Image (cartoon, rainbow, N blue to C red; front, side, top):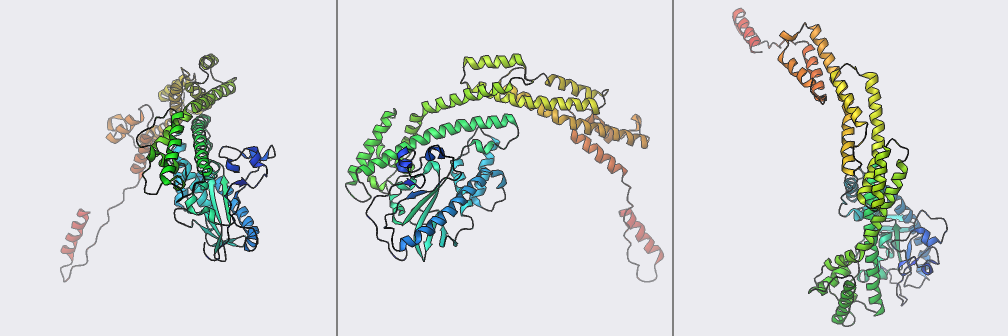
Length: 549
């Protein structure tokens, strides 16, 4: 810390939620803080849910008197202001489609990542959650550096060794508050940063934003099928994430309790003995999940600590020790597999049952819908049945679109035209709906529907082009025997099926080119010849110039 030094009160930092006071007793928080999986309703004990998550306060080690008492109110005011900015930034980040022109590398990365997921929900982009958080931090801190809030000077992303607080509040050059912006799933992670100076500042706060649910990226689509499909996939991913995060948080707590119960700190005690104790603890945790010990157990133990965001120093490890997080991932995967499968099966079953109810009384074929119900009761949790059901929601929309196109064709297109007649036959066949209520077959049917809906405009373009060519031929007394080859080629292209809208555009351009008046060539007049030889020489030169042009 620069400037004056504050005397510490000898106590261990713990976490508590600012509001409500009874949060610790409710068991809703980690070490008294906000647990990654809870919602605000769990903290407010049935009271109305607050829109903004209250900050997490790390009680100071410093006596709240003298200079600190002067800054307490200012810090509180600044934290409230910053917390509102975090909440606003969270809302902005969720509304990701509006961020395409924001001048920020981190925000742009989130925009690109969210767009990639919306385009293909089957594939979760790497770092999607991290980039969501970075975008929130960037938006919340935008324009804050070197400003004053609550009478304190704001600095952003101030590096101190291996840590970098998102926001630092200064008073007369002294750093009086460090503030971290984090997801509700990572609250308390600064407790694992013992060597990073978080315990050396008078005021320490965490500003919390709700953890990203992948389905929120997809809720902007108007197509009921893609909206449902995105919700299903996002729900599956979220179930996996929630279960694995819960297991990681459990391991975080156990490792932290191991360190605190033995009063371990960096640089004290027998480092080798602490490493062995930590390794044996992790081996036992892995064995409980069926993950066998292997020769690199010490490397895996340090890697687990680092991956969980825990400073390995108090556990006897040094910065130069090798590490790997492979075993941690194995343990988390093994511990999570059964619960993930259960949650996803419940999601599939609930989705199918809900959508089947919504499809009752719709234009969907009753007999085939009953077949889908029977398939559901054979295996209620089958993902394939859920996908087929949600695809049918799109079928209803498509049937309405096909009906509208069919009515339009009957009202506006010539019924005696061969191309129109062929198109109407296709519409009639498509209006019967998918032949089998299976997800892949329904998707194929929907793709064909989109082609037919778009085809009516191409047919109109072709009919207009054929009419225009006919008028051009009549005006220029063109008939089959003297028809130009280019015109014959256009007629051949226009008679093709499916209709060729590009051929229609080419036909109209060709007519326009023929109707443009031919411009006389530009004649370059040479300068008059010198001397008396004006007539013949000049005339010869002019004729030559005209021929060249």
